[in-house]
Structure formats: C-alpha cells, structure tokens
Length: 372
Ligand SMILES: Cc1cc2nc3c(=O)[nH]c(=O)nc-3n(C[C@H](O)[C@H](O)[C@H](O)COP(=O)(O)OP(=O)(O)OC[C@H]3O[C@@H](n4cnc5c(N)ncnc54)[C@H](O)[C@@H]3O)c2cc1C
Image (tube, rainbow, N blue to C red; front, top):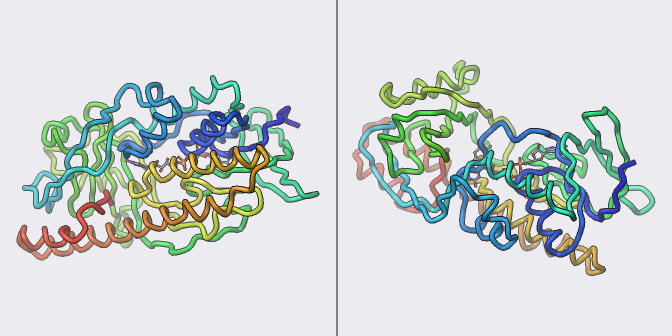
C-alpha cells in the first residue's frame, strides 16, 4: 500500500499532468502523480508554445523557472510556404505561436517544480495499469518498476493525463469520435546549421511532403514527414528526410524519430464517475495542431473544478466536458483543414501551378496552417 492520503491521483507527468497537479496545489489540494518514465521524454515535444500556455504557467507562478533558457516569448517567427525546401517562397505569413521553449526542457523543468512542491507527491518510474470500481470507490493499480511491486490505491478522483495512448481512456472504454486518417507520418528531430543560416527568421517552413519547425538551440529542427505507404519509407525516416532536403541544407545529425500510427480524434466523453481525461488522452491529435495550449487549458480548468469538488462542491465532470471538449473539436477541425490544404498545395505544386495559384490554396484560412 502507498502511504498517501492525497484525494487526487494524477496519471502522467507530461505538461498536462504537471499543470493539473500545480493547479490543485494552488488551491491547497494535495495530489499523487504517477509517471511511467523515470527519464525526460525522448522526443522533443512542444517547441513552439502559444500565449495560453505561457499565461497559465505565469499564473501558476512557474513561468520564470519553467520557461527559462531558450524562451523567446515575444518572438513571432515567419511561416514560409514554398514548392520545395530552399526554393523561392510562395507565401510568407506570421506565425500564430507566441514563443519558443525546448519541449524536453519544458517537461524536465516542470517535473523539477513538482519534486520540490510540498503538496505534490511525484512518483517517477510508476505505471498506472488499471482501475476498478468497488464499494462506491475507485481503486487504481499502479506498478513500481524499480521493485516490480503492484499497489492497489483507493482514490477519490483519478485524472488521466497519460497521453495519446491513454491507459485510463482504455480502462474507461471511452472511444474516440471524428477520427482522422492522416496517412503515415513521422517526426524527425535533427541538426542542420545550414537551415539556420538559410532561414534566420522563419519558425516553420512548409513544402511538398515535409514541414520543418525550428526548435530551440542552434541548428535544431524537427521535420514532420508524410511517408509513402506503398514504399519502404516507413523503415527509414532519416533517409526520407535526407531525400527531401537539398544537399546544401542536409541534416548533420539525426537525434530522434517518432512514428505516428495511432488514430487521431476526440474522446466521446471526458470521463466517467470520478475519473477524468485531460490533454492528449482526451484528444490525441497530430502535432502541432495538438497544441500544448489546449492541453494546459484542460488541466487548469479541471484542476480548479476538482479542487472545488474535493472541498465539498459539485462533481466537476459535466461542466468540465461542456467547457473544454469544444476546444478539442475545433483543434480537430483545424488539423483536418490544414492536412487537406497541405495535400492540395502539394498536388497543385506538382502540376507546375503558378505562385498565384498556389497562394490561392492558402488564402482561404491562412491562420489554420500547421506543420504536417
Ligand atoms: C514530435 C512532437 C512535436 C510537437 N510539437 C509541438 C509544438 O511545437 N507545439 C505544441 O504546442 N505542441 C507540440 N506537440 C504536442 C505536445 O507535445 C503535446 O500537446 C503535449 O505533450 C501533450 O501533453 P500531455 O501531458 O497531454 O501528454 P504527453 O506529453 O504525452 O504526456 C503523457 C505522460 O504520461 C506518461 N504516461 C503514459 N502512460 C502512463 C501510465 N500508464 N502510467 C503513468 N504514466 C504514464 C508518459 O510517460 C508521459 O510523460 C508536439 C508533440 C510531438 C510528439
């Protein structure tokens, strides 16, 4: 048995779970946070963050510590569309995102804040494996990977912040709605000083079959690639990156690859009983339309409502779902339109269309662009 009387179990210490625990603590409510990994995430995660996320971290009083080193909160880089990376731009527009921070840095520093907080009990290397409802209570099972021991834990409220492949969502049996079939994507983190030199003021470069996002740190980029399902591209994403960048701008080092196989969509309901979903577990979407902004806003909203419930107020679920789910549905629509636009742009570019014709594809809703 774990020695805790925290009324809330938070599953996952990614950006959503960390902010949820901090929001609860801001209201004086202790929480137990279990995080499967004992190391920082292997992929870069959010690099460009919006004003909502920055504002939430500010309100929690952790912006200075969490966004330190690498934030360029006032910067608004450019998004450049061209037929091919390095070619003349067809359209250039301002980025809608507010600032930049390394994704790994964001999670690492948030976890450091959790470790230091007297109201938050962060257990790293602990995995939530399931839950059952018994005697009017939810009992969660968590596994301590260091000792191999399982613990049954009666919990008042359980918040699933465990990402796109959420075990909590699976345990609740909640399906995704409005799923999107995006094709096969992958994201490659890499280093190219030549890209930095060629695009000193651009935060995103969109071209046929590839989009590039500038990351924090000299020469650091992430490439989001649409793979050809019928070829062997899936087996060698680094090779695909290589083939889609001109030699003069090539990656000098590939740092990591994330493949996207899972269905994307929005959970039909945001919880059941006293178990809730927040962040990517409630709306797994492809980056960066899966903006960390929506995830952190879920966490802040749920945290405030959960604190009220713990202190004797009404259960949070109805109001939480009513207020937050529409945001994810709108993100999902933006992603769908952006994918469509990128595909139309690529198809038209392949026909040799003029820059004016290509710009026409982007003109209808330019703010919806996304690096797909
Ligand atoms: C390559 C990439 C690039 C991105 N770029 C951007 C960007 O530029 N801008 C932006 O805003 N967003 C971006 N995103 C999206 C952003 O990373 C997500 O919105 C954000 O990480 C979601 O946070 P989350 O906490 O909901 O989920 P996650 O970050 O997935 O965190 C879930 C956490 O739960 C833990 N966990 C999972 N299962 C269990 C379990 N059973 N028990 C215990 N713990 C568990 C995981 O280890 C993880 O730490 C990007 C994502 C990726 C992958």
